[in-house]
Length: 418
Ligand SMILES: NC(=O)C1=CN([C@@H]2O[C@H](COP(=O)(O)OP(=O)(O)OC[C@H]3O[C@@H](n4cnc5c(N)ncnc54)[C@H](OP(=O)(O)O)[C@@H]3O)[C@@H](O)[C@H]2O)C=CC1
Ligand SMILES: CC(C)CCC[C@@H](C)[C@H]1CC=C2C3=C(CC[C@@]21C)[C@@]1(C)CC[C@H](O)C[C@@H]1CC3
Image (cartoon, rainbow, N blue to C red):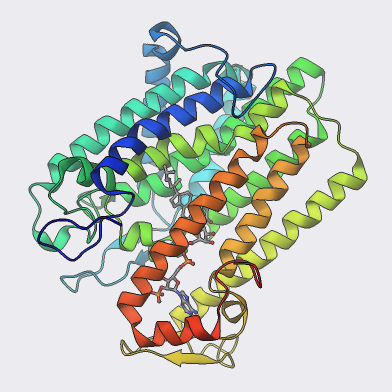
């Protein structure tokens, strides 16, 4: 970990050099995956079939389509919400308010897309536009991050994120300077984290399913499973939208290139990789194997949801009867740490469940190619790194109590392994 001059706050992601490298590597990886998924050999580690020129990447029509998508999601965000939730207390002791209408946005998007398809919109044509769409999303992420960086120059220090104020413009551009950039009540980070990318991901999956039906008469069982699992995951995230308000992305990280690109481009165009692969490389899948994969996904989801809900219930109200009997460690901040139940098994049981689901999403693609396992490999790396970042933040917040928790719950994600 590098340390900025004159400060004790450690720089993450390898400092400015690491940030600069990631700003090139992440988009390059995304385009590599998009190109390789449709190539015959589909080799994750091989060269891409061709290098796309400007005529392949750039299309004003596709850019317009992308901006329309962002506009639609922004309009749905502004609709009246079933609930308005308060975020955690900020440095200046205030709390921001957030609309809880993400699930409503998903349902309305599904209705609008259904209407448009029945009126003749060729959704099956979307897979042919993935490369220029990804380019439009990447371009938007760069421009948007630049505007956010400029906006952050004019805000008071209390509005800045703890991490993105190193003074190095490349590093701060990557990590994001302002914690909660807003125009009036429109919160850009919260909007991007859950709406255009996540809903875009399942829409791309659906388009791939429809194109498979056009090509082969009906979608394959493998394609149904991947679509079903991922739609369920996105629906669950939007149903439990309020939980995102306590994640480190909202409470700790600024809004810069990492999250703008991650939310707007990386999620829709790389998380749909399994469905992209299946369109071009159909895989036979029998009912017994499909049933086993469903069980693996259900097990992952059970661990993921129960662990997340247990912590969220406990954080909202520690005397709630569902969590009141759990053993806890007091901390100097007045908050407690769970040390039994799911959070006594490993220090991140929710990551364990998420990883099991990630495996279940790749298995329908068979074992002939490594490519569809990219998500599982990337996600393992992301969660191991995220766990280390969270650990650092918890050690700072809770000190000795956190050390005691680590002593009592020695494994981080996988019991007896890691
Ligand atoms: N699909 C994807 O790409 C991604 C999915 N995710 C998923 O999003 C969800 C949220 O993840 P994330 O925000 O990383 O982290 P967590 O939901 O795991 O939250 C970590 C926080 O929980 C609190 N905590 C930790 N241990 C305990 C304990 N023993 N008792 C009580 N509170 C504790 C601490 O905050 P405090 O004490 O302040 O409450 C800590 O900072 C996860 O399910 C993850 O799998 C995450 C990233 C990417
Ligand atoms: C571009 C880099 C590789 C880093 C990008 C990270 C982002 C893709 C993720 C950071 C945290 C995320 C969360 C989710 C999606 C991925 C990103 C945005 C969820 C919304 C997924 C669904 C879960 O139920 C909640 C997650 C919160 C964190």
